[in-house]
Image 1 (cartoon, rainbow, N blue to C red):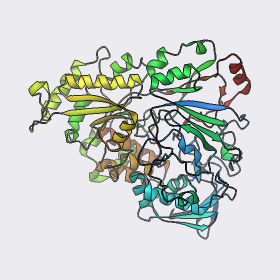
Image 2 (image 1 turned 90 degrees about the vertical axis):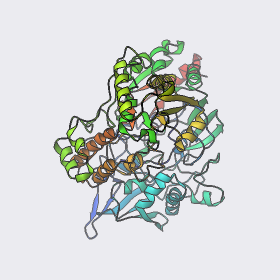
Image 3 (image 1 turned 30 degrees about the vertical axis):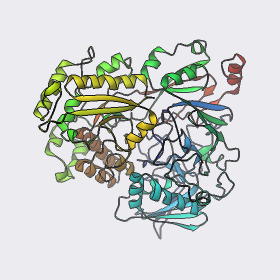
Image 4 (image 1 turned 45 degrees about the vertical axis):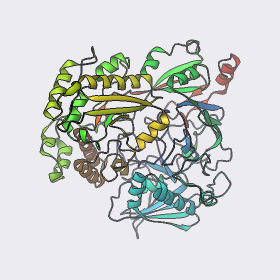
Length: 635
């Protein structure tokens, strides 16, 4: 699993980062040289199990169109505000897509899990025990100010994230790496802590964005952890062209991009410009799309998708409505309990409150029946836990000894409850929830509100941002109505996006509707950042603050697996354990990307299963673009 970098993750543009997916691991045709005297592997790419689908002389990725024309613009929408162009700040709200300006030593391929191929690095070397890794940089790699990318820049960027990065990331990586050193201008070595797992070590240091050391050192006020409207010098394919605070951001493809002819980049980065238009909310954004203020929309609101895509430009063919299969497991989104709040310490209280959420009603009444119910953190994959533990999963769990509760082995995996879709307040579930809350010490008292023995109310405050899709906001509000009917001191609080971002970072909520947790199809440091105890008190990627000895034991043991079958058994056990801890009330998911775009965009026939690729794999057909302009469909 790729570790989580502290990039802005609250943008409304869906899936613009790398999405990991599930593939069968087979021994690829990687050209790997073994130095027998030192048992050192030298390769053009990396995967933990040693499998690489692309050989050293691969001409391009299998899922690109190598002859895709260059030119034109991709324009998208974001809602809310931004006050920074630094995606790695601990404060403020960063602008969309700011990370596309920075290269990394290597990048993961979107048609595999855990396979990385060189970008800034032309090769890497590591010993059998993965005690170190050496990256050999490409001499031709250049920052956009014309200076070369050196090993010193790589070391400096690594240290910036350790000293000024988000605490959860900085602490995790600080434990992994004992030394980072530039051996010469184009060779960098990372030495790893012998007491930590070998998982995610090379992936983490290889995936860190690289900045210009000289740019940061030219002004001591420049910091990684502070918001700013000045962009750190990078070496990526796009560079900030212009911005208008809270209105738009424009990135321009670099004609002098040093890496445009790399095999990894052939057929990618096809647009001259990428423009992001900002709108106050989703309604305004949709109207802007119909008016042609931007040209591609990835729809997130089922109501709009079901009822509003009948405007003239679509019916006449100027706009295409397209459902594209999303092969990645759905994001484990839902109502997340803040486990730091004492009223949620009892799991039975959490289960009782979950019974007040009527997914079936919400799906039929608010989501137009377009969502499927979700139970698992790896829904729809072979890693999804079923029934009681058996086979390899049971064998794995038995190795953990006392860390595994007895009922965990004997009871069926936790699944979401079912509700009556005909009415919001399913009386059967509410009666069951009421009884559970009574037994947990929260009886109904004065004013028909539940209180504990100390007279404290069972409080559940759910803040949500004002730019949330209407259907999601209504789902939150109706859930609160059911909680209130149950006697819970519940409220939903609509706040502006900037305030919501601040409250999310400070964990200032009782419950929150969140999409921050991620699914997992391989093991690695990202699991610890999302689900582990070590950083639970402050990790932005763990909004519940989950700290479970059972989950920790499974994650730790997953790091020690040395083959795909054992790793899969461990991850199935992890799915079971996360559902057992019951810190998220799951909501549904959509199995497709809902896209609408002006009929000038095209994409490869063999899109990778785990990425839409609209920013880097799609292109513009110039004849179609000219036709749209001729008939006035485009501004």
